Image 1 (cartoon, rainbow, N blue to C red):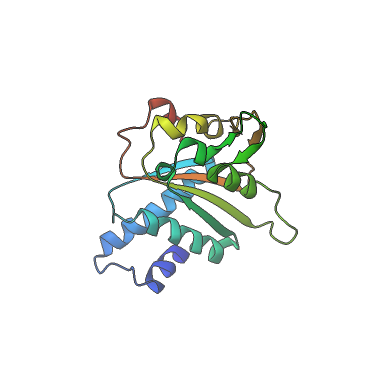
Image 2 (cartoon, rainbow, N blue to C red):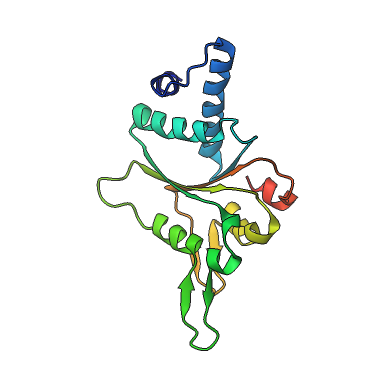
Length: 181
């Protein structure tokens, strides 16, 4: 908790109301504890409600507390089509072209280089969780931890990687998706 409080204070985010400040710290601790047991988590709340601050604070506090460096890749999954997100196979040449997410996912799940054993990699999905894009992620979110691309290739989510959905609400998320986080 001390490291979280220090990060909040150094960033100018210490609330003058001690109760609110304590709740800010608690939210960071809750996120950390959830990530210990789940490789996919959701952080839900209104725009401007502090979701990104919780993630940034937790990342900085982990570096101070245990030397874990957190690298984040943020993507809005609704900002592109499914083919642009996951990739597409040319029907004539059968050549595969990675999408934005498949390329990021492939890069993040590479083995950690020597000397970087204390690195965590987060993919943060900043936007609505709906059945259109998240359906392909269900097998990653469950215990299989496998992303199956439309070309049949499978990429395993490695232990040094985690997925975080940063959303306003869960209005469009299916019960199957929510239960995996």
